[in-house]
Amino acid sequence: MSLSLVQSKNNSSNINAGITSNTLAYASSPTAHNLLVAVIGAGLTAGSGPTDPTVSDTLGNTWTKIVAVHEVSGQTNPSDGYIYAALNNKSTGANTITVSFGAQSMSFISITGYEFQDSAGSPNGFSSDAIGSATGGNTAANMGATTGATARANEIVVAGNANWTAVPTADAGYTNGPTNSSAIFTGTEHKFVSATGTQTAYNTTANGANFTTVVATFFTSAAAGAAFAQHNARLDMFKTPFRALGPNAALIQMRAFPSSAPVAESIGPSILRVQRQPWRW
Image 1 (cartoon, rainbow, N blue to C red):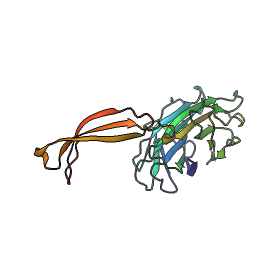
Image 2 (cartoon, one colour; image 1 turned 90 degrees about the vertical axis):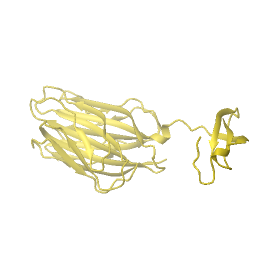
Image 3 (spheres, rainbow, N blue to C red; image 1 turned 45 degrees about the vertical axis):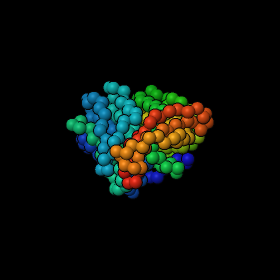
Image 4 (cartoon, rainbow, N blue to C red; image 1 turned 60 degrees about the horizontal axis):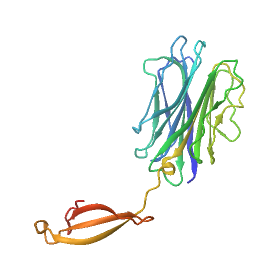
């Protein structure tokens, strides 16, 4: 198993745009079964309360909110941070993400779209694991956010930051992702880890007045699933033929047992029809 980045891209609206939605078109068509991640930074208009967006795409994938943080209330221009994710279960094709806040007017909406893959394949998809978030004003020591301990050794870590001071700097070990610097500053970063533990993002970035930071980890579901028990099977005997079903029909009994512990487990009698006839178990 080898996790890797396929592509990433950002699209940010202008500040004070008074918009309710924004879109991001992937540069290339995502591959089936790959993990899609949207890191979103959004600014509320003055006096409005926090709200979570809906995320969709043109391929019809189902997007799930992984983590969200709303900036400390009372700020003049509060910003929110989100990470949403989807498994690309649809056929490969051009794909555009839409982030919509409904009727809520936003001062800006920044979207960074990621696509990750597992070289071993991921037919069982990906699972989200640990998350972390942070928010604050100009009294915070830094803009870092830390997750809980990860459950698996090999995971993807994705983080995003939005603030009103400067483009955030990627932490050691992370790869800096797309950024935006049009009045509101947003940044993203990602890395791949090979050991369990907590994950911290933007801890080395100096404090920025009015900031939000979100971080989430993901693993390939196939790597985390329970091991499949291997079974052997034995055909014990043929019994009296069922002539009504044809000359090649018979009642048989199958017995199955784990290969590591050959203790018979009876499945019970089954009816089998052959010569282009349906099977019934």
